[in-house]
Amino acid sequence: MTPLPVFPAIGEGALGAVERLALDPHLRLVATPRAARVLLVAGAQRPADRLALASVHDQLPAPRRTLWWRSDPLPGLDAGRRLPDDLDAAAATLTAGLGEDDEPAILDDRPPNPWEGIGPHGQGGEGMMGGTPYGRPMPMTADDLRDGLALDPYSAMFGPYLAAFPPGLSLRITLQGDVIQSATPMSAPYTQDGFAATPHCALARVLRLMELPALAERLVRAAAADPDAPRPRLARAVRWSGLLAAIPPGLGAVGGRDVRGRVRGLIDALTKGTRRDDDAVPDLAGLLPGLEWQEAVLCLVSFDLARLREAAVPPAAAHGGRAAA
Picture 1 (cartoon, rainbow, N blue to C red):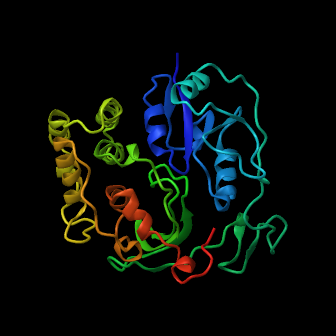
Picture 2 (cartoon, helix red, strand yellow):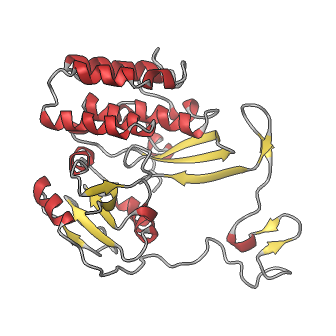
């Protein structure tokens, strides 16, 4: 039986449960909704994330299905059905067969800017660089922070359901090529359960990012069996995998520890059966600019989720105003 491709939209307190659910061999968590058959909405969702969740839903190819697990549907997103809260019952329902019924798109299928029939050529452009040709503004070059190479800057919102990010984290990022020029937190990661905070699961997230999924699964299975047992053999396997050597020295240094140091601390905690040491709270707006995309994501994943939640305070909230949606 081919595993069912599932894209998880993870909310409050659901990351650990989704990690355990993914151990079912009949399920396969995918990194993009375009590769999924099912949208699994797990854990309570912020009302401010409604449009982002609708956008994720509409990216699933037909026939698509939405399943709500330990979560109440948001207004306007009432498609799909609920799963039982129990982990085993939820897995059994997911793998029992969902039929071929399709769910209609939630959002209007239209470009971000009107363009048809606009401008001298009817494609939205105006003059040499003006207008919005085919719905998108023309890029303008600017000097790169790192080497001064003049590339087109691209600004967009990343998150809150980006698979590589901690669930709930949203950043407004400006990129030139794959180098980050600026990063502004727009929403903090969701609070997660204790299972997600174990060194096993924290290391598993780093290992997946470094393309070592089999070792990541071994760690999650060990945590599911006993999250407090010392695991020196598993820790040795992580060391021998070359993970530490693959992380550039000095990357993402905060409070005297870089990414390699934080990962080494997780390996030590796994060896002893203890929890990770508290990290310093990073300044994301100062830490990420100048890093390449993969380096920046690795930095984010290396931090404790609670510390990252403290760091990702939206600008308006930091000044006592309303946080950005």
